[in-house]
Length: 518
Ligand code: BG6
Image (cartoon, rainbow, N blue to C red; front, side, top):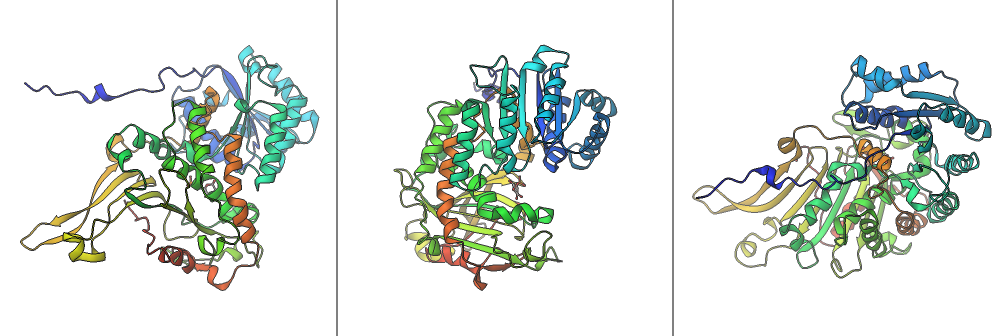
């Protein structure tokens, strides 16, 4: 007799033994900034509301503007209503959270600010709040060095062996603007604290779908068999955004698509898709494999950039039927700016698994839709039977990991169209997060904050990883120092400059663009 096996039997909890988050204080530098209002406070509030934060727990925001605790709390509440995934918080929940939220006014360059912060910490009602400290640098990168130094000088941030309790530093991206500056920043931070205390953020690693890449690959036996140069023809990774630079023109003028998305989000996703299985799920083991993979990507030299790296900038166009301005017309953008808002690269991985399999990665602003996905495209069927008769009309197999939105995974293969004629066309098997698990997906920052509070660095970037990524980006930047040519512009609302299609066409391939609903 067959007995049904409950799904629960196969529900495996991997983090049951993970370290509990101890009561602590989160100190946010950049308390008046956008990131704090849009992401950090909503994330902390949700963690609190769901009972995921330890008690006691407090947040201290540091910024220059004059404000009282009350005014900052009121601002944060208004921001939560606007930006949070759950809308207006229930009054009692918010009140309970806000009681642990404080404001510390001061200039980041002034040592008096850190003395004030010290006093506030000293006055905390519990020993743990004074000794367990997470410093979050949600500030301009130029301030990372100064703040960490001042914290150290004030005795608030010490090395592992010198501290009582724990002290950690969360550093937002961009971490440096090239290899040299990233190295200098690493050296500076590592003079003050140990690597295990530094949590370099790439918020893509906090996304459910990005974390699922390793689960998908290494908790299933069938897909990993396909994941190699014998069967994979090439891989496409796309991070496309419909919106433009909005009010971030000033920042973007210093960054561009390659630094803003390529150096971090795209290379991180690529590393997870292509890396070898780690020996364990420990943070160092996972990160060792990612670094190994990044180091096996063949750098694109400035001379090769002409055929393997494409940049572009959007001019005025139409999105969803609405006219939108060009990049050069955006606020705080130079009218003759040569900053790229689009990038596409052909990358080769020189290792046993992937030798000869190109990875095409691209990202752009003002593209037709916002979607991030990984498409693993398999080799065509042998040129006999159906393939011989249909030629290029016979589609190839592909697995698409849709990272956002409409999160899910699809397998595309050919099937017979029902009927008396013999017709074949692609069909799709699809797993949708929403259908399977319901619409709830926690924000990346919730997960990342919780991990940093627990002291687990798996989802953060290690110093050698960030440097390996910059080594790949720097030579391309060098090749892009000349002004943009006419061919490098694309109309807002299109899939990038023609050169991006040519990059693929040279290899006899084409981009497969994300679809509105996967
Ligand atoms: C940020 C970039 O890191 O990622 C932004 O600075 C970009 O320019 C954003 O828009 C994209 O993140 P998400 O989560 O919206 O895909």
